[in-house]
Amino acid sequence: MGHTLAEKIIAAHVAGGEGDDAEVWPGDLVEVAVDVVLSNDITAPIAIREFEKLGVERVFDPDRVVMVADHFAPNKDIKSAEQCACMRRFARAQGLLHYFDVGRMGIEHVLLPEQGLVVPGDVVVGADSHTCTYGALGAFATGQGSTDIAVAMATGCIWMRVPETIRVVYHGQLQPWVGGKDLILYTIGQIGVSGALYKAIEFAGPVVDGLSMAGRFTMANMAIEAGGKAGLFAVDETTRAYLASLQVASLQVASLQEASLQVASLQVASGQVGRLADLQTRTLADLLPDDDAAYAQVIEIDVGEIEPQVAFPHLPENVRPVSQAGDVRIDQVVIGSCTNGRLEDLRVAAEVLRGRRVHPDVRCIVIPGSQQVYLDALREGLIEAFVEAGAAVSTPTCGPCLGGHMGVLAAGERAVSTTNRNFRGRMGHPESEVYLVGPAVAAASAVAGRIAHPRDL
Image (tube, rainbow, N blue to C red; front, side, top):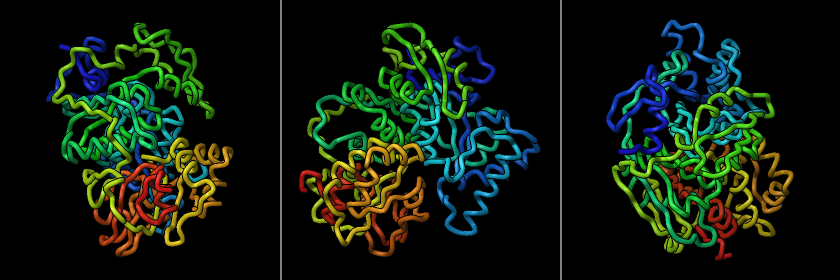
């Protein structure tokens, strides 16, 4: 019997195992070597305190421990300043090579792939539930608590129970304005927020084959909203083209049947070259599920009838087609986050907003996912389109997504948002409401003053 992609990646990282001969099955408890350990300005200070209790002087590898100041940064108050100062001091003391502060940082799950810090076949753990985003690159990436992250920083290892895998196969032709956000919202609506509890999700099928990396990042990002341990995409030409476009790696592979993944070069603008050896040891077979893999469940979805989706309060599973949203008047729109803050997302939003004005009763906030995304959007004229439409454009930050700053809601207010969660009080007052959508519906809603399909304009 063959193995799923999650099982193959975990097996290749079993600490003290037999390398290519290692084999794991769902339910096995294993110790796993990690490639990247991530934390941010909320979770890092807790992990640092626990790390210090271990009595370990140095992290296991300063090139593989990544810290990003993105949740309450730029600092909104004294407490958030102290959180970032704690992380900053630790990063300097440990000589971390990948510490990202204001002016150089971005939203962590946009930033790390952009910087080439995650590559196909990696095991990544992060003190943030949306670490599963990196599954878009064919990595096994999952969130953990800060105490576990402290141990990972010290040892380079974690333990886990090997998850079962659900395979979701998408067929058909996408309708206009339907993207990765709509596919994942629809899927969560079908299986529920506990439908993939402690399971990996493999996204597959002809529709996925044609999906952009931005769409894949969005879908992997929200695997956790279905309870998933991880969300993964097999490595294909789209993955390799994305890596090459970042000048992270030039992957020269003649076809998907070729046995090896040959890496010609690994160059990142900042000079990071530490991941080359990892890629050189991984073959295409390592980054694809076996044809005879055993799945806990296989779900087939015809996308032809899926229109842009809206997740109503207060769960991501409360999904309706936008045509059935009704007359929902709104106060705020947020376009950005680790779910939909990439350049492609901003292009879609700008296409809708260009030449139009944000409704006078609506505050529209646009947050590029990283400094690079911001710069690219500026060069393309997207920022100008947003400002001329009456939107506010922010420096990269998680800010409003978690109700932290840059867009907190008052009692009774409603927000349409491209973020990933709409739990009660998630974006501010417990009596506020958050409606999750893709960037096209978000931009159209900003103009209409209510939840709207772009064609309504």
